[in-house]
Image (cartoon, rainbow, N blue to C red):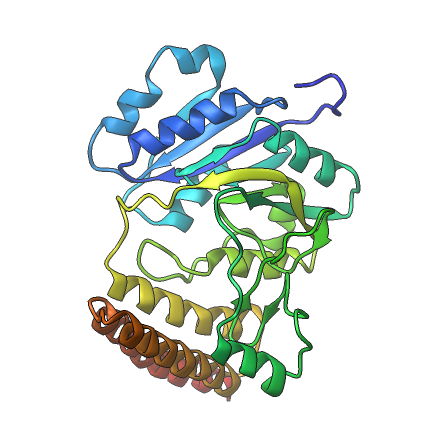
Amino acid sequence: MSDSLPSASISVIVPTIGRPESLARLLNSLAAQTCQVDEVLVADGSDGDEIARLIDQPRWSTELNVRRLHVTPPNAVRQRKAAISEAVGDYLLLLDDDVELEPDCVEQMFKLIESDASVAAVMADFNNQSWSRPTRAWRFYLRYILGLEEGAWQGRVVGPLLRFGFNPVPKSPQPIEWLGAGNSMIRRSAYNQAGGFSDFFLHRCTMNEDVDLGLKLARIGKMYFCPKARMAHYHSPSGRIHPALASEDDLFNRFLVLRITKENSAVKSFCSIGVFFVIETSSHFIGCIRRANFSQFGNHLNGRLAAIRRVILQREVRSFHDK
């Protein structure tokens, strides 16, 4: 670690499933950091031995302290929690297995989170993609339903868990209300105090688990977007679940985060994800018409409908306990 930086330990947490090439690229970028990490824990949900063979390479015993944990069945939250339970660092650097860090990325994140003891977490920027802007339909909702002025949603989590980054990207750190589970550094004590990742997510892609964690961490301390910390995200297509399951995860988990973590009523939570269902499905349908391509529309629709069915059953259970 650079002499200019305070002494503290950093544990890198990486869930993976069958992506040895992208994982190798990530490990190479970690080895080249100006602020060296203390350990890398790879939670491997793969059936094969490709990841094990990669981590067994002699170079990682000298360039990085890499350990592999075999976690099955694969589930992003379960994998992260298994790795975190073995981690010894004062800080947890949560990364996806398909990112590549710029050489000073860890240093920039570390300096920001160490600058103020009240900072619970920081999130890095991406150098190969822009933060998405709300669609026209969502702009109407944000402006006329929620009453937000133009751009007031940046860095916030609003309505049915709509999360927004910064576009354009600011030059200095900015407060943010959510974290990405693949590009964030968290103070270990804050993670423990917040209760860590929740356990109620569907399937193995666990959509919205990072928003949920961010909402809980925001009760503990400050969170910042760090524009000087940058990495590339390659969105590796391998190892992903079927689009219908991803859509089901996305919608159903929104309900659970609203209902359990944000403690909204069952009716309010149901109405919120109902708004999300209508606007997202309508926007997707219009986009398919413009592209003349409906190849995935049915999968996403079926997944969202399955989530609505789950929500109705879940709402009945929650409403019973509310009485």
